[in-house]
Length: 446
Image (spheres, rainbow, N blue to C red):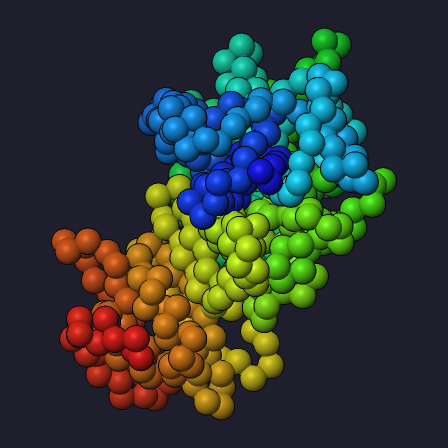
């Protein structure tokens, strides 16, 4: 019986395990040193905020794994002996495999800042990070925290800390919020919203040094502007990197991540990589080589399971999309919306009078073909936007049928009329907003 061993019990590894079991009788072992059971990583912040208990983050009952003949091993793999198809755990235990799936995730970036190893300094990715954050903010009095890095994990950490009454200063090296991802208007909307929650945003500001006391605990930071800010907690959220250090100096091909082809195969036979740690050697148009997003891990797990079970299947993630929250404003993006317009592109931007709801659409200047959209404070239907972008719908069509994409509950305020009105004024078009057409929504050609 083939033995499939998966290192990592995040969304990528567990999805692969579940789908391999659905399609085969292979022996399956999942190894993780983080937790015994799979949990929803995106829910960790709500445990800290008191909205749920950790056991509520587990999508499956503990008995699920034995029932489905998926063996779970809580252990750290310290070395992989690829020539002999063997794993060596830190405990000394060895495990043989026939197929190996590396789903080892990410780790928070540290850029060699002086003082980064002091107590009270940490990132936020793993369950252990959550436990450390609880310890760092309860066993010691924390009045102010400094967060380094203006990404989504930093926003989550800010919200978590502020529910405990901790003041937050946010260091962002760009001139605007998430300046390498969001266009200017979008970034300003998020900036205003975060300031309304009393986050102290510092733009064009970088961490230079973390200052500690005699006990080895952080008490302040110094910026590149030679400013010293007193604080008792420092969150390092300047992105994450593939967790591949223990795989270096082996036969495995590694650049930033573990290099894989379209079938998620590495350069070694019967060795695969999925999730945050995988680096696609030839990514599809509009996709990045490394995509550290929950749904891409799930898609990779499903795709690889088919290959492991004899139906070799290429990974095709399709149109880029993502979603997140900036405190209580939801954000969705579909297609390609870059921080700066490319040549030959135009944009349309609408914002409500309170500056909390935003709609940014990018389209080709000559043809009007829509390339991507960002939405703030409104929910859009993924299947509709995916269909529009795949079929090359133009801006006039999208605006006329904007109601069809709305996914907000019935009693939420609708903004389509205002958006279309501004679009007509700005572009000189005469688009008429159509009523929702559910028969069209169900059409494959829509």
